[in-house]
Every structure is written in C-alpha cells, then in structure tokens.
Image (cartoon, rainbow over all chains, first blue to last red; front, side, top):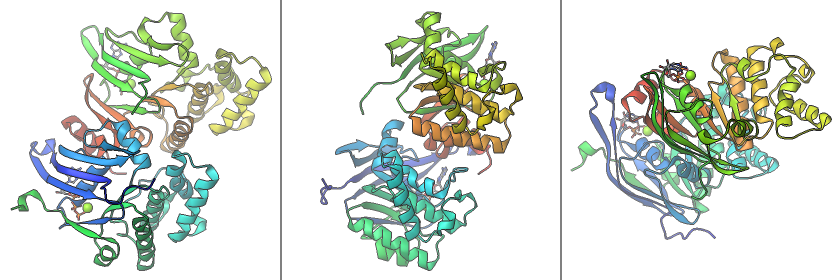
Length: 237
Length: 258
Ligand SMILES: Nc1ncnc2c1ncn2[C@@H]1O[C@H](COP(=O)(O)OP(=O)(O)OP(=O)(O)O)[C@@H](O)[C@H]1O
Ligand SMILES: Nc1ncnc2c1ncn2[C@@H]1O[C@H](COP(=O)(O)OP(=O)(O)OP(=O)(O)O)[C@@H](O)[C@H]1O
Ligand SMILES: [Mg+2]
Ligand SMILES: [Mg+2]
C-alpha cells in the first residue's frame, strides 16, 4: 500500500543539538535549537542557510549519525511510527535498511570491494537475489555514467565525481520512502549533474519524501518543492 | 522490535588482586548484531571478552546466553563439559595469535575438520570436501589442505583460524584483535573476508579491537572502555562521528583521517 501522500512520513519536532568539545574546555556549541519540520511523500525540502548554519548537522541527526540532545524525530517505518531520537542501535539500523537512505558527500570506501558490489549491497541486504541486485546496480551505474570498465574495480582509486556517483547509485538501489541528500551533485560536471537531478525528480514524483542540501541554485530549483531555512541559534530573533 | 537477546550481560566485574580489570559491564547483544569493544591498551577489553566467552570466571555479574540447543543458559554456571560443548558447537573464538586458536601439529584440513566432527559429522569424504570449500572461502590455495599451519604465513594462519571457527556455523563469534600483528595489506584482506562472512552468515559477534577503522568497517555497535569501565556506547557511526565522552573524543581525534 503506498503511503498516504497527505501524511508526513518524517516529523521532526523541537530538535536541539549542541556539540561539546572536551578538549576545548567543554563549552557547548549550540547548532540546532528547536527545529521542527514535517515532510510528506512527494515533497523535496531543500535546507538552506549559510555555511556552518547546521544543515549537515540536521541531516545527520535525521539519519541517527549525530545524536539529538532533545526533541523528536519520527519516521514512518514498517507501517508504524518509529522514534529515532534516542533509539537503540538495532532500531536505527533497521530503519536505515528499509526506510531511510542517505547520500553523504563522500563515499566511505570499503577496501577490495568492487564498485558494482558496493552498489548492490543494500539491495542484497533486503533480500534481492544476486542477479536482480546486479542488474539494478548495472542499470544505475550506467544511468549515472560510470563506464563499465570501472564496475569491477574497487572505487578507492576513482575520481571524486565517480565516487560520488557510486555513492548515489548505492543509495538509490533500494526504493527508500525517505531520502536524505547532502550535496549529491557537489563534485559532478554539468552532464552528470543533470542525470542526478533527473533521478532525484523521478524518485520524488514516485512518492519519495526527500530532504536535501543543494548548494547549486539551479539544482535546487529543479528538485525542491519547498525551502526550509536553517538558522544558527545565535542569529535567531 | 521483537525477539530476545542472544547474550545478556549484567554487572560483570573481574579483578586481578586489587586491580579492577573490568567493572560493572552490562549490555544485551541481539541476534545478527556485531558489537565492537574499543579502548586503549589495558582498558580491559580482552578480560571482558574472556569473561563473556566463559574462558575466565568473573568475580561478579552474569552472562546469559540464548542457546539454540538448550534455551537460556547462565554461561558461568554451566558444567565445564557443557560449556566446552557450547564453545565447540554454537560459538567461535578467534584469537589474536592464530597459534593459540589452531592446532599447529595437524594439517589445515584437520584443523577445519575437527570442528565438524565436534558437531557430529562423521563422513570422512564430506568433511574433506567441506574443509576444501572453506579453504577456498578464506582464499587459501586448495593444495595446502594437507599442510600444517606451521608452514603458513601469519595472514594465512589467521584465515585458517577463521575457517576453523566458522565451518560449524556458529551463532556467536568472539574475536580478539583478529587483524592485530598483521601487516596492512594482509589486514585489509582479512577484514574484507570477515565483513563478507558476517554479512552472509548473519553472524552475531563481539569484536575487540583498538583500531577504530576496523570497528567502523565491521561493527554495528560500539562500547568504549576506559580503565575497565564502559564510558560510552551506541551505534558505531554515531560514536565515531559524534563522540560524547571526553575519552572517546580523544580516541577519535588521535587517529588520522582515512
Ligand atoms: N562532529 C562535530 N563535532 C563538533 N562540531 C561539529 C561537528 N559537526 C559539525 N560541527 C559544527 O556544527 C556547525 C554546523 O556545521 P554543519 O556541517 O552542520 O554546517 P553546514 O550548514 O552543513 O555548512 P556547509 O554549508 O559549510 O556544509 C559548525 O560550526 C561545525 O563546526
Ligand atoms: N592474568 C592476569 N593477571 C593479572 N592482571 C591481568 C591479567 N590479565 C589482565 N590483567 C590486567 O587487567 C587489565 C586489563 O587487561 P586486558 O588484557 O583486559 O586489557 P586490553 O584492553 O585487552 O589491553 P590490550 O589492548 O593491550 O590487549 C590490565 O591492567 C592488565 O594488566
Ligand atoms: Mg554541510
Ligand atoms: Mg587485549
């Protein structure tokens, strides 16, 4: 059953986050204060704010990569509403496996694993057959313009843009209902950027709820349905 | 989420004389989870692992294991014979020093086959076939089946030890610095192997390492130990990317970015 498009699949309420760096005297650096945001299927919310405002921090909190200090992050997962703030690791991991995809700016390379397997892995984890996962991986790598001669090589030696596209392929191989994108087109040339924009729009129009950071205004205009301003706590009225 | 923990650890404490090696440790390990234990030398990682695996008796606390064969068992109240059976059938233990986990005087094939015999396999041809398959899986040339591990390199020995432990399809594997003491290229190969095996066999594991890169690659969750105590625990990437405790921040800051 497709999700009810009028109901948010991601609901952030009163989220706060500070960093305390003990080596620097243990002072708390507040980055997010009282952030609330709801995202429904088919929406693409672009996070906008100056450098250092906390856009990546917000996205990482939504993925459970950064710990929320206070507030709530609820996602629609397996027909249920699951709280991610303070969740047990196994809950967060299950949500990531099925519901929540994340494209970070950099690929974390796994030594010795060929690009095609890096891409196929999330699908295999969800029970796709080897053949099916490979077929989808090849399709995505093709669409993203990675030449077949690279498919069987580990991405460690790939260029920044190639790694970025492998990363995108890995996050799109599963149809996650919610996608988080941190500058997915940052290191891409014009042609490849258009391909990624096309893929993002397809997902959005098929009902994926997307939250993303897009520095490039043209990319943002092409994909976003809505803007969410990220304002550092000090600058708030 | 449903189900019950595979391992439930409560208030585990172990002293050597008046030195506390591990103090008041408690956690639940769920099926399919890989838990990493990190911390500096002497922080009590090996002591804790040995207490979990029943190789060392704690001074206080309990370790309850959900045995496939016999339901919930208190690891430290089992008879020696039953614990040995459990260790051979449902568990694996990968030592840092492969020589401690292998029988150096018998062939590679026998090292693997022994575990199969412990779980009741009797057909010689099948044991040999399975042993050969596993040599392949851990990337040791098949014609080394009848050689002794004394003739193997450190990396090969470690891979053989892994094969010996995993051939019997254990539910839970304990590993103490499985890549310690090996050079970097050999390490990468073993990590890759372990990663694939953990993923494909849906193993649960407790892995001790002082290498945060290894922890990031192989584990779902981390416990950070300092002076015998757990000072922080959580999802691996969260602990490494957003460390809360001063000690964890120091550990993370002291590694060079990859
Ligand atoms: N792991 C961390 N530990 C300590 N401080 C952090 C951490 N991550 C981010 N910060 C701090 O939080 C603030 C917000 O950073 P963040 O990366 O979220 O900004 P951003 O809006 O994404 O900026 P940019 O547009 O430059 O990517 C910065 O001051 C940054 O130094
Ligand atoms: N058999 C023993 N007898 C006496 N003290 C011991 C014994 N085993 C360990 N200890 C002490 O207990 C403390 C914890 O040791 P342990 O071996 O568990 O540390 P570790 O975290 O595994 O360190 P490493 O990273 O160096 O392997 C240390 O102070 C150690 O000296
Ligand atoms: Mg950013
Ligand atoms: Mg040790």
